[in-house]
Length: 140
Image 1 (cartoon, rainbow, N blue to C red):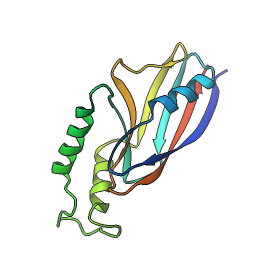
Image 2: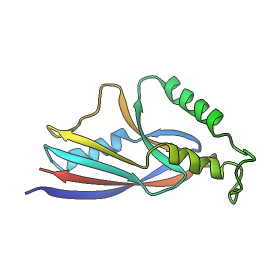
Image 3: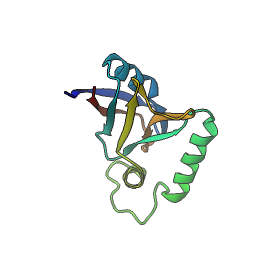
Image 4: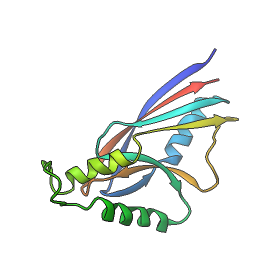
């Protein structure tokens, strides 16, 4: 019979950029003592997202940030929604273009991530925030 586990991680972000959470997620999955499972991560926000990306070269993260700054610039006159500043609507668009949910298989008790893959919260707002990531694990 499959078991289910869930928790919520509270992740502080320093402002726009990627915050790696792989270690926290890995430790929590390991503590559940499952061998084969499916982990679902869900971020409870509309101006931040989740990402699996290379964790070896920090230039990858910087390049992603620069690309999205060009793609969806802060203060773009196209946007009317500016309730929380010029980065408000661009943050929502960036979250819409990326993912708010990830699914990761667990095999032999370990996340089935590739050698250079890490799990990130991608903060799209300029100011620091606290982001909640819900983890749900279903398996044996």
